[in-house]
Image 1 (tube, rainbow, N blue to C red):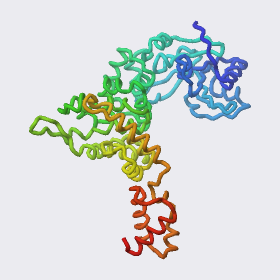
Image 2: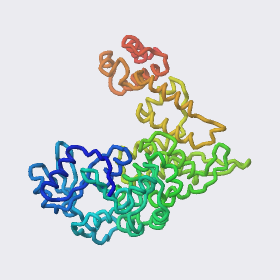
Image 3: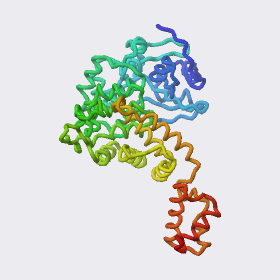
Image 4: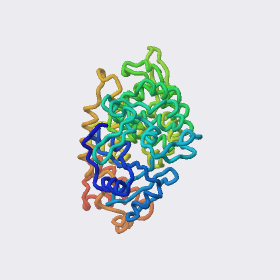
Length: 446
C-alpha cells in the first residue's frame, strides 16, 4: 500500500476519527484525493465508510446531519461549518436510464465500492494516516496524466452517459490525455448523451469550455459536441475560401474558444458565434468566400441551441448579445467607446472585447492581428468607466427639468440630447452647463 503525505482539513479529519472510534472504516475518496495529489485545492472532501447510513447518523448524532441521498447511502454532516458527504460502501444495481442505478446494495468491501466509480483517477481512497488505496492504477494514471475508465468503458458510459462529458471535462481542465479504449468508447457511445438531462450536460459543458486544453477536446471530439449542439455539424470541414482564415469554420470556432479569457458566457458565445456561416456563405467572382450577415444568423441558431441547453434567461441573453455583435465595429476612440459603453454597459462590453480577442486569435494573424487594438480598447474602456455614458451619469435629472417647467416625454428627450452632447465632448457634464443647455433645447433656441 502506498503512503502519501495528505493534509486533510480538520473537520474531515474529525469525521474520520469519529468513525474509527465507533469501530468503522473511513477514507477520503474521489476528487479530493485526486486534486490533493495534483496540488490543486479540493473543493469538497467526501468520505466513504463501511458504516450503514443509520449507523453514520448515530455516529454523528451530536452534529447536524442531512439525508442528501440516504437511499444511495449518503449522509451529509456539518462539522465546524464544513459540509461533508459520507457515503456507505456500495455496489450499484442496474442502470435503466443511462444515468441513475435502479437500486444500490451496501457492501463491507472498499474495493467493490471503488470499482463502481467512473475513472481510475477518481477511484483513489486515502486514510487519515496517508495510506492510499489504489485498486485500479489510478496513481499511475495520475502521474501519466491519463483519463481512463475503471473497467470496461462501454459499461461505464452505458451506466451513466454523463461520464462522457466528465471525461472530456477532466481532459480539458487537467490537460490529461484520454486512454485509447476510453476515447474510442466515447465516440461509440456519444448518442447516449441524448438521454441525459440538458441541465447536467450543460453544467459539464460550461466547465469544459473553461479548460486550458479546450481546443484540443473540441477538435478531437467534435462528433460528441454535435450531439449536444447539432448546429455545429454543418461547420465541420467547411472551407472559408478566404485568405483571412487559416481554418475551416469549425476549427476556427475551436481555436477561438481557447484563445480568450476562461469565462463561461464568453467561451460559449465563441462556440456559437459562427454557426450561421454555412447558411450565409457564397463565393464571389474572384473565388473569395464571404458570409455577410452571419452574425445575425448565428444568433438565430444560437437561440435554439441555448434554449435546449436550459440556460438561465440572463445567461442566454448575454450569450446571444455577444454572438449577435461579435463583429460589431469598435475603434480606440474615447467618443466611440463611450457610445459602446452606453449601448452594452461596462461588463458586457468587456466580454464583447474578449469575444473579439478569441475570434482574432483564430484568424490569419499574419495578415491582420487586432489583439493590440483590442487591448488598447479595453484599457480606454477602463478609463472611461468613471465618465458619463448613461443618463444616470449626468449631473442633472428629471426633477431638475421639472423645475424648469418641462413635462412628460420632453424630459426624456432633453436628457438623451444632453447625454449625446456630453458623450461627444460638446458639452461639459456640470450642473450649471447642463441647466443652461437644457433651457436652450427646451425653448427651441438650438
